[in-house]
Length: 241
Image 1 (cartoon, rainbow, N blue to C red):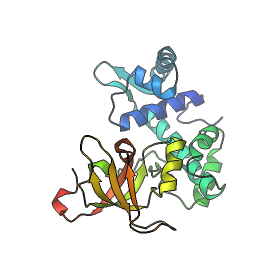
Image 2 (cartoon, rainbow, N blue to C red):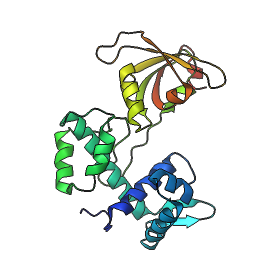
Image 3 (cartoon, one colour):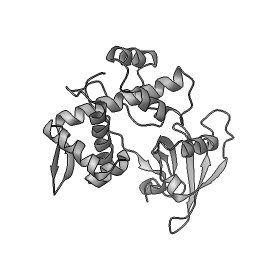
Image 4 (spheres, helix red, strand yellow):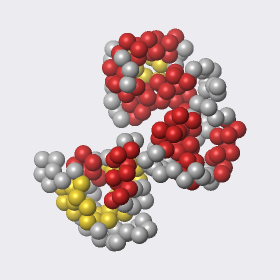
């Protein structure tokens, strides 16, 4: 078993990574929220949090909820890095599809060595993002900051490039792949219906075998999972809604 920052259990690392991801969503991390993310009881989450707190990996307060210490944050980012590198490796080398890699990477992330991780990184060309568009932290625990916006925050007539898909649900990923809505694809927002109604976009043919101008209508919640880099709008002062 590999260790991160002196940790000796895989379960502790999984909890730290979950806390980091919840916090990145700008959510106040509570025991209940953490238990839901880890699919465990509140009692089980509370027990683990006690161990993490004793190990100086998390802090808890009524005002801020659960927060990572610097040591806990580094451990979380080391595991996230390994997971995302594995996802790239599974696609580039093993031939998996992007809807399969999260499960497989989770099964492997605690069993590979640091040397294997380094060879995997080099073999894949030192990737900066996972297949879903999430940035890969550096070896020393630095997470790149990216200014992306949800597709539903654009104004009509804006053009953007999809950079990240904020889900690991394999059913959603398979559906988006069929539509050609993956990181790298350019889209033009045509219309967002009122009251969280459907979102109409045009694909702009930047991925292979896609016909330029192919129109898609997405549910508002699904469109909200697509995070984009705005590129052009007929109204430069009104890119965001």
